[in-house]
Length: 392
Ligand SMILES: Cc1cc2nc3c(=O)[nH]c(=O)nc-3n(C[C@H](O)[C@H](O)[C@H](O)COP(=O)(O)OP(=O)(O)OC[C@H]3O[C@@H](n4cnc5c(N)ncnc54)[C@H](O)[C@@H]3O)c2cc1C
Image (cartoon, rainbow, N blue to C red):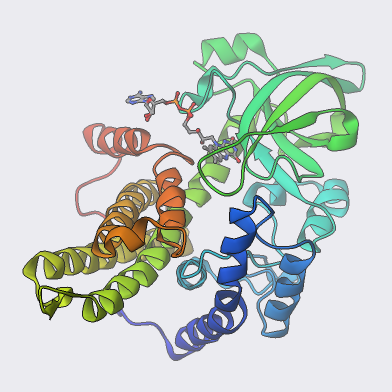
């Protein structure tokens, strides 16, 4: 067992760190200013410009297979990269990528959707959640009814990340009501690739975070048969696969953000004098720093194990739930302590802590809430799907 990064991995980490410090962190004040004024965090075209700079540094398609021109870094390296990028709140993501489930596309669909998405010419979103079905994904109501060579989609999706900007959506709908009912929602659902031009519309949802998801409305949207993704009635497992990837990534983001926040708290505690001494000399502050450091480290190893397990081709869902549950909660505890250590300044919009505080709250909700992760972890253990201490 080797618990250290290889020289090559260290080099990738160093390069990303440099990119974040040189290209992203200097934009932080501008991002805060824009958001305070109700404008988009980054001006139009800026994300694409940053993505091209990252490309010059060799970071394009970081999780994209080499046959599609990607760097295909592997999941452990992805985790390291996500942690580094999360050290800034500047909303950045690397170019050259597509959602994991879009690789189930057939040859025609690859030409029409996968390749343009990887090339940055098209934007996608994924829609499972409905007003009456969030955690309870088996309770979706959206229907797709066959009519000749087309399927007619009716229903509503909610909280869809990127739904306002997307050119197409990968949407889950019921295609066989009987099967859906008999299987308690596990079967009889299908994933469709639906272009915006086919007729769905999106509505912005305001949240306590800085960028809102969308509600999507489908009223008799006609979708050609050839736009089924991954096969008829295969939608439920595709949905779970999409969510499964996002889970440990949330943990990785929480680790990166928490590391940066803790450093801010350490710097501030050394500087801030009360009653004649830096607050860093008070045990009350030291314990908050120590607890945060321990929890960050624990979350990091959970995330890395989830990523490593996936790289071995093994089922990482149990670990992904653990990484998400612990990482998201760790992130919330750390940002709260860091805000507390900064006192009144922590609560202002002069500093980005309050922004992270609002963002961190989402980590405990999307891609499966805390309660759902606990349910999965307990079920795996109680039913014997996973043994205690299995993943080493
Ligand atoms: C900003 C944002 C972006 C999102 N992006 C996407 C996206 O891109 N695509 C997509 O499909 N979805 C997306 N979601 C939806 C997200 O995954 C759901 O909000 C989440 O799964 C919770 O569902 P819900 O909001 O319906 O809450 P509910 O399922 O109604 O849950 C309400 C509360 O009850 C608890 N609860 C529910 N069931 C149980 C149970 N059995 N036992 C104990 N407690 C329970 C929950 O944990 C929660 O605390 C997004 C959500 C947000 C807020």
